[in-house]
Length: 116
Image 1 (cartoon, rainbow, N blue to C red):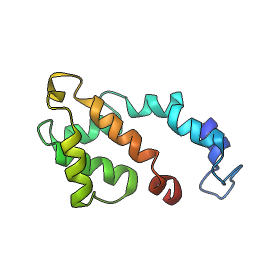
Image 2 (cartoon, one colour):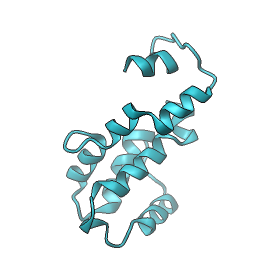
Image 3 (tube, helix red, strand yellow):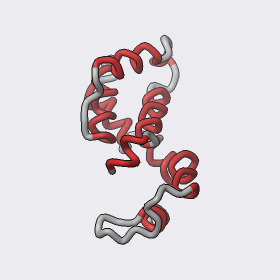
Image 4 (tube, rainbow, N blue to C red):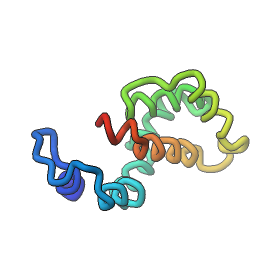
């Protein structure tokens, strides 16, 4: 958390660099802290979304991930595209994997970075 605050600032307006630096982008895309948080089994946001919506409800899981990251539900087109891109056999693999990818993409979207 201290590394994120040092690179992004805090909610008190104490930004070290707020202009979207390369370091900030790399921390979001490749940072161990972010990836570990996204992939947490049982306690993370993705696991929570799956538990709330149910394993057989991909639309519900995606809606929870949008609310958690962008504070809005996906529009009909976004939801349709994401559901259509889910691997057909994802339930037989690690059920979290495709949702972790979606959540990672949302956290690295311009909408998230500019609004939060």
